[in-house]
Image (tube, rainbow, N blue to C red; front, side):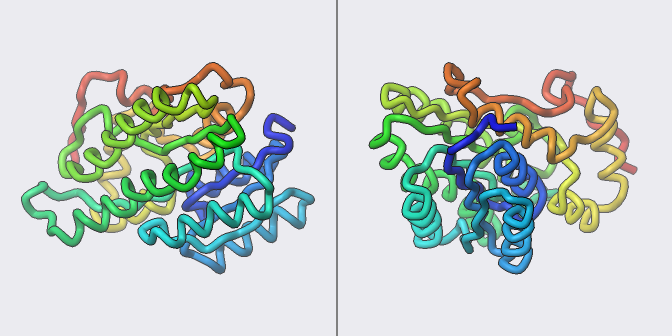
Length: 261
C-alpha cells in the first residue's frame, strides 16, 4: 500500500478489463485516479465504488477517438488534482481475425483512431504539464502482437508496434525533462474484449490462446495492473524507454500456431 501516495493518475478505458484493474490498483496504492471510458454507467459506478472505500477516484467521460474528449480528460485531472503524475493510455478495440485484404478502410481507420491516435493525443495534452512540473510517467498499453505475428491481426499488430516505437522516441526526447515513458505488452488476458473475440470467432480460439503461452494459461488483468503500478511508482525512477512484456512467455517461445480446429 502507498506506492503512489499523492500522485494524480489518468487511466483511459477504465470501465472494465485491464484499464479497470489498473485504475483500481493505482487508487489502492494511494493515487487520485481519474478513470475514463465511454461506458458511463459502468464508469460512474466504478468510481463511486472506489470512493465508498475511502479511495480517491473520479470518472470522466472520454471517447479516445475524439480529440476534445482527451483534452477535457487531461484538463479535468489537472484542474482538480493540481498536477498530472501518471497517464495510462490503455483504451483499445479489437478488430481482426481476418486477412488484411479483407479489412475495410472503415475498420482500419476506426482501429487506428482508438488504438494509436489516442496515444498520440493523450501524450500531446499530458506532456506540457509533466514537462512544466519536471516529472511524470506515461504508460502506453501495447501488445505481444507488436513483437510476434498472429494470422489475421495485421492492423492491430501494426498499431501496437507503432506504440513501441513512439514510446522509445518519447522516452529519449522527454527524458531530460524527467518524464519517463514506458509501454507494457500483455499476452492474452482474460478481458471482456477477448471474450468478444471468442464469441465472434469460436471457442477454439480460447483453447489456442492457452496453448500459445508457455505458462499454460492466459493472464489476469491484475497482473498487468501490478506492472503499471511499478512503472508509475518512484521504484521505476530509472526505467524509461522500456517495453515490459507481461505475456506468460508468449514472445519468448518459438512461433507456434496450435491446431485451431
